[in-house]
Structures are given as structure tokens and as C-alpha cells.
Image: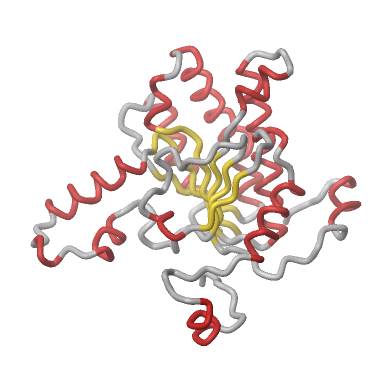
Length: 262
């Protein structure tokens, strides 16, 4: 059961109704360091505040009817950051698992990990695996945590596994690769949100995001609240996804239907 704070209850019914809710939303949670610098705080405080905000956005996703959310928690490129910051990010993830796991399970959130656990400290890797197992039967919201993840790396692993399975080159199609990526049993993201004003995917879901709608905002991640999230979903509802077709074809085939994951 999701319990809203008094502040959330006051604003819950003030937001415009969403006409079309994306089934799968992916988020590049960017700007923690710049948020902290702007306030004269250490980068570590930006990461901590970003983690606190994630809890609020998960609750908002459930409230708004999003069924799948994929978050970019730690990329394969993030290993090049200062070692002290990398260690901090690892500690924060472990802290989040320890502190939030029970509540996430009670709220119906199913946690999945996408990425590689090889090279991660064994205790943390075990906790990630256990968190996925602990919440595996939940279905209110699927939360994909992209941790030690890179889009190109994901495609390389998919191709390697295709070769290991002995699939002939002439039999390999787009669907074959889709069947071998981390999110093979889920629909591709309908909407990818990036905070902090950047206009790039940064190696995030580059296979799955081929036809995703992109929404960027100059707001830094710690300040990206449920109102900002709602604005992104509202903007998504105004767009028409064509998939290479004309407006007339889309209207003829789908009318006013809403994409849903089932």
C-alpha cells in the first residue's frame, strides 16, 4: 500500500489528468554533482539528495500508473570517476537496499538489475541479487536498476551469447538481438527522461530506446519532483508516436488507443 504525505495529498488532485500514460519510463538521473556545487555542498551530498528523490519518484510512478521504470544508477563509464566518489556511490546503493527494500516490497515494487555484477564487491553484488529475489513476485511497478550498465556493453554481451548458442548469421534478426538483451521480456521504453539539461543518451538503453520519446529538462535530479515528472508524462501524452509511418496511417490503425504493457 502506498501512503501519501499530507503535502502530497494536498496536491494530488491539482495536477491535470493524464490522457496517455507511458507503460515504460526510463530516467537518466543527472545533475547531482552540479546541484551540490550550486549550493556550495560536496558532491556526496548531491548524490544523497538524489537518492532521497528517487524514493519520491518511485511513489509518483505508482500514483500516475507507470508500470515499468528503468533508472540509470551507475554506468560502466562511471568507473573513471575519482575512486572516492565511486566508493561513495557503491555505499549509497548498499544503504538504499538496506533501508528501502522492505518498504519497496510492501508497496508492490519488483526490483530487477540490468548490467554486470562482475567486478562489484561481493557483499554488494549479493545484496543486489537478494533484493531482486526478495521482490520477484511483485507486479505493481517493475523497477529496472541499471547498475554497472552500458548500452554498447549490453549489445556486445547479447551478440556473444547469440554466437555461443550457435545461431547462424543469416538467422540473426533485430528480434534475435532483442531476445538476448537484459530487458528481453519487457517492452521498450516509451519515454526517456533526462534531467540537468543534457541532450544525449550517454550509452543508456541505446538498443531499446530507438523509438522512445525523449524529454529533457534543465532541472537537476534532486529537484525533479512529482510535478516535474507529471509534466514529462503530460508532454508525452501530446506526442504521436509514428514509428516511421504517417499521421494518417497511425490514426487509421490505432485511433486513440493507448500503449499499455500487459
